[in-house]
Image 1 (tube, helix red, strand yellow):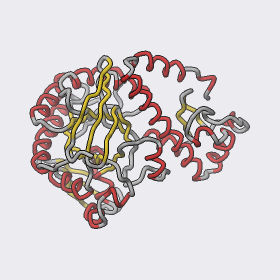
Image 2 (cartoon, rainbow, N blue to C red):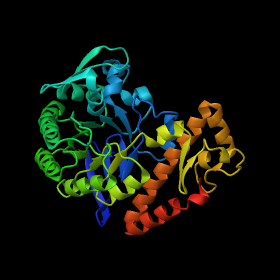
Image 3 (cartoon, rainbow, N blue to C red):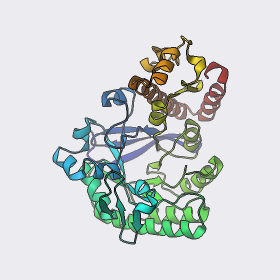
Image 4 (cartoon, rainbow, N blue to C red):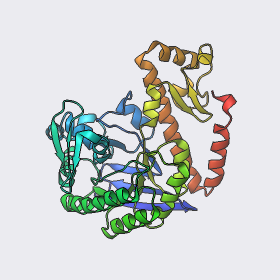
Length: 375
């Protein structure tokens, strides 16, 4: 395995890109979906299951891990890979999004952000340098710059101020990251729903010559067409030979459309969160297993799925588990959901390689719309 961090674009179909990221801990086939392991655990899943489903990389979160159990403790215990028993690459979010969402519990300055823990009220300071230090202690393979993300809608002045602060923090993060062979730090494009701000942010980050680029501040309440417009602007500027990561996205439809705009990496809590609330993703559409009509339905979620969660458990049994509040409900449905997401990504990669991506999107969308076969 390579001792350096590299990205290779294998082929493309329109703007959709099939590529591969190579790192010392393994390869990431792109487009890729990263299951979210916020606190060092992909909720309701064993790490062996996550790996067996085809995930090449998972996500951890600086904010949650710095609060509990603490980055220094994880470092003493061998780093996040050893601690969580995940041998493949890990990407860590900087913690910025979580801190910014604390509203009244935090104070933002040029230096960084001070905030109160949502766990015990203790005060912390998160600066660009400290964010990178924590991510290095966790020993993650891809690290995110600290940025300021604003909720939409927002005024131009608010979006511009946050974007410019994020750029200054990106420079400080790059300096703090230094030269770490085999690892990468990604900058984060901000600018809200304003094309000119997105252009300024993308161009300035491009000038920093980072190993990869994230697109942040989207999927925060704006319409899907606005998100796609911002991707058009941003992806047209970002380098062709660097990976592009759309943060916090998202729905299967968002992923299909974003890939068509040139995005390579995704993460979202949706498949795991939905699983814990009785909502299953299938190739026929979403199935709400809380609904009473499933109480006597002997069919599995998908008899043709290679995943046992989709193939071997009846809808009636899953409905029973959900209604009874059994922990097994969240485990099995999450297992199904992450399998669906990884199967979708494999289908996307295969379709791009076959230069039939538009046909694949049409076929998948048509099958989803056959609601009578699902819910």
